[in-house]
Structure formats: C-alpha cells, structure tokens
Length: 239
Picture 1 (spheres, helix red, strand yellow):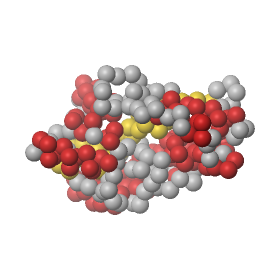
Picture 2 (cartoon, one colour):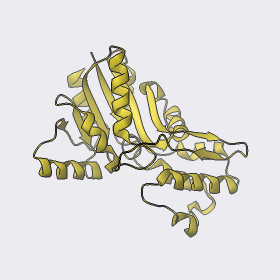
Picture 3 (cartoon, rainbow, N blue to C red):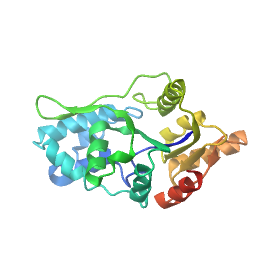
Picture 4 (cartoon, rainbow, N blue to C red):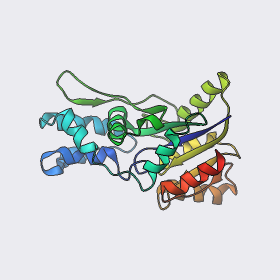
C-alpha cells in the first residue's frame, strides 16, 4: 500500500506559469498584440503553438528557451518536498498532470536535479521540428465540458488509478496538489481518505469553497497550503 502524490505544475511546483515565463526569451520580452489577442478561452495549447512558432521565427533556439525556463522559481518549500519524495520511492509514487508541455517540465526538473522524484508526467507532448522550432500538441481528446479541449485531468487520473489497480497497486492515500480551475475536475476521483490540497488564494481553493457551499460536502479532506513545507509535514505524518 503506497501513497500517491499528484501535482499540477505551474503555480504549484513552480511559482509562475512556464508558458508565460518563456516569453522572456523574446527580444523585448513581449508578444505582438495580434498574437497576444489571438487566444480563445479553452484553447490555450493552440495559442501556445502559435507563440512557440513566433519564438522560432525570431531565431530563438531551443537551447535559449531551455536556459530561460531554468530560471523559473520553484514555489516555496517545493524543492524540499520533492527531495523527500525522491528519497522515499519505496512508499511514495509521484505524478504530474499539467497543461504545460513535456519539454518545459523536463527542462525545469532536470535543471533542479529533482526529476527522480517524479515517476510520470502527463502533459501536452512537445518536440523540436525540422526547422528547429518547438511544437506542442494537445494531450488527448475528451468529452468533458468543464475542461480545456486538450486535457481533462480527471480522465488522466482515473485512467492512471484504474491501470495501477489492474496491476495490483492500490493507494492507501492520494494527495492532489494544485491551484487552478482545471484542478477541480480530478478531485472527483478522490475518496474520503484522500486529501485535495489547493494553494491558498488561488482559484482551486475558491472553486472548492463554492462546491462545499452548493453541495454541503466534499468527499476528500481539503487542506489549503501556501508552502510545500506544509504539504511535506502532512505527507510525513502519513508515510
């Protein structure tokens, strides 16, 4: 019986948005108005595809993008939390479910030396095309009307849990750590013994309060956090 840690990435593991942080690699550090105004709600990954194409057209190399992303700050206490997880892999599984992309998360975790803490990353696939530009694609298609068109985190988590259950892996407790509105949907996968951990002052916390007021109860326990050290203390009490 293991513990499962599930993390969002932007504004959770790192203290900013990697998709907006990357704009710092552009000359002047800004997008043209026409590109910035092309975003449609729920279609962020399509927008990022256009952003990455523009970055490539400005002769910014993938190595330069990587160097900029390596400077993104980690949220307070997250390095300590991930270090602890990496030292207890016999009892803790750890996954990331994010609307960022594979290259951004890989580069950031490798630069920090913390990639060994994370067993799997579920996010939008990214690669370098023949022109030397970064490209990003949606993670999957789904029928959830509450989530962005490219990823439903509930479907990702439900499939992960069912596949592990088929292999005989049952989790004694699941911790879900996130901040955004798209982190609400996967909390429906959690049980009474599990814990949903919204970052204090962010939209997930507000959505959970609203849900509590509407339904009168939320199945998992809710523990808001502002530092990874608070999560670490809760995890240590479990493992």
